Picture 1 (cartoon, one colour):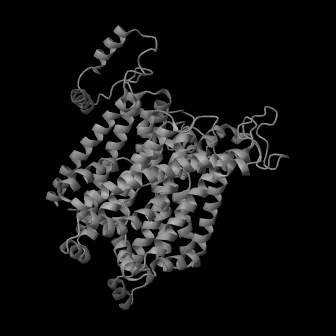
Picture 2 (cartoon, chains in turn red, blue):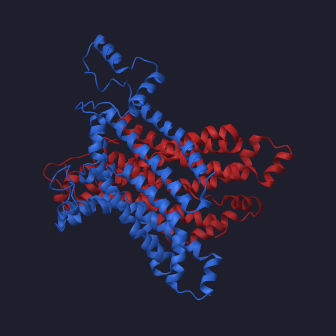
Length: 299
Length: 316
């Protein structure tokens, strides 16, 4: 789980295309339509999200209802298509409801970081000089921690809880997003057309709003999609360590931890929550790859 | 070169200091730093006395100065739970984590270079497609779950390998014999998946990039065989790949907590997990400080080694 420094995004071309050819987004849409992998995993992701949102309508049973007699039943047990967990709760329903918290805890930090990191990056890149130094060197300090360690450090100090887990992951994702935003802003700032806009009297605010953001958003957005994949794994990992959700809430990472002892009794049921985390994370990763190649006009 | 090393060292100092500030702040992030020490029914006088004893009544910068001064002398405080010096517990755990992380990195490096090299050399082929898929799966898989799955397959179902622990000697006394190594296989494989995926990607991209350069065409035009061309490619790819590998080792040292938890591997991650569970903040601080500083140090080494191999890499 690494937040390796992202390659310098090729967004300068995108912006120029946005400005000069009206058919840019339809080109992107066409490319995505031809890309079967992206389509498939996009659809899978949409299904996971929709099922999580409409969990109360979709789930066959109450995810909290325990049953002492029917504990750790196997997949295909009558009435429990995916078996039951260590307290006899219906696994299918818990997996369906689990998506709500897991997705929420995975996506929210990246969205928070998108706003804060994006803002810091644009500020640093646009103003430059000492402001840039101050912001980016502070970010470097957070880069000195492996991401898992940073998340666990903050979360561990703050104590267990959904809010604390989200806060710690937000802090993990601000620096990488700020770096992307900063590098794109610095590139765009020195472009001829931005110089021209400035010469013709456009205010800084207008330049940032019209020229810089158009470039930064595309790059940062695609990068953020791939970060969600990491975020989902980390968020569930925090719950797995007991730092996120608390029982009896259904959450994939926590469920995985609770079922650890069950691998000797019913291994296939115990592994199910991880399948969900894997599928979700993989979908976000492939969607991000697909978007990146569809939006890069050079390819 | 020397001036580069000096500049790089100077650049490292503020980062390392920033890390210590952050780690120091952790104890205050946890709310009242006395919260974990004082009994809930303690009277106000006792609390005040403890506050003085621990130095929490002083201004924050002073507290930081004292804490840093002690840390520099190797005094990371004492565990709240068992009053043992934090450094002592950590030093017992560090070798175990090193065994695991170094094995995982070497495994990931070997497999990653092989797959990435093949994929980069035969671009667009079956190997390339499989490798790309493997690389993406490698970075998308929750490795704590992968660990569980491996335990289920090889520990529970097939019964080939032990599910948890580090060997017959418990948490100490590692030997490179089969009785111990068989305990290492599953956690090392689990932990190697991420670096393997990343090294595969890097090697593939680097090899593909080098192969597209003109000097390779020139070598081919001279009539060099595949193997001979590959030798040049490897020499050019080495700095990048080694750098990635060094950083991966750092990530694994810090990130092995989840895998160590799954396998009950008695390393730093295990210590950290225990500290979190018992809210033993000095222990948490000490572990994080040690791992983060190690990561900073590793970054430094990687940069210096990389630039000494390839002077073009010199960062400004």
